[in-house]
Amino acid sequence: MTEYFNESDLIRAKRQRIFILLTFIFVAVLFTAFICVMLFVVYMGLPYGSDKVIIVKIITYSVTLVFVGFCFVYLGVPYKRAKKFYVFLNNLKTGIKETSTATFLETDGELHEKDGVDCKTLIFIEWNKYKKDYFERKVFVFYEKNFPAIPEKAEVEFITQGNFLISYEIKNGDVLPEENNESNNNGNR
Image (cartoon, rainbow, N blue to C red; front, top):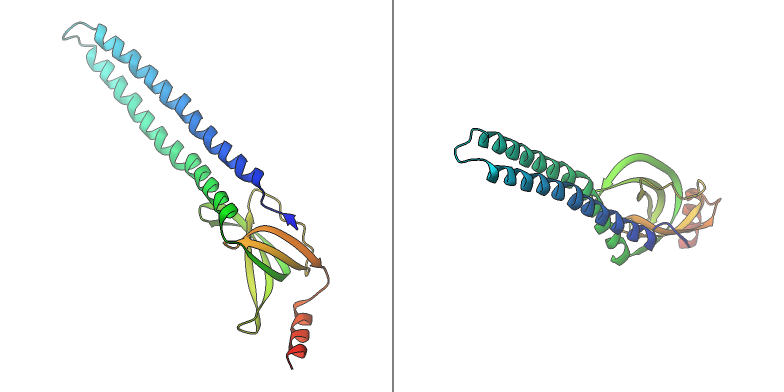
């Protein structure tokens, strides 16, 4: 089977999450702490009742507001997305997997979101043994990665976790759903 999701994706996502957090700590927190310590030293060096105290307080409040705003934007967007992506990949690794066989129909490059992760879809035609009919099944793939190289109308066996593609194997490239339906109806009589 061809692996679409592998362990290196999870390791890369973990490194990205740690890099974003460390960058935040070393750049934003240490820079803000350095400015606040310098302003405190200036404040302590001012004479009692000085008019410049208000200027130091305004600068300190401004730096604090900028820091809080930066935290909200930085931790609210990139870190939150990186963390969701890491948790999602970890769930792909440890979750319950489902194996299916279906006929590949088409790709849908439109942006979708699943559990906070951007993805696009592969559309398959799959036989439902309980309803005795075909249905359209959408299987998610990473938006950043290329679509798997699956020829149109190929019969594909794939493994998913939470309807997200983990691995696939092309069985043959010329079986149509109508042919399967006729062979299933003939075999059931």
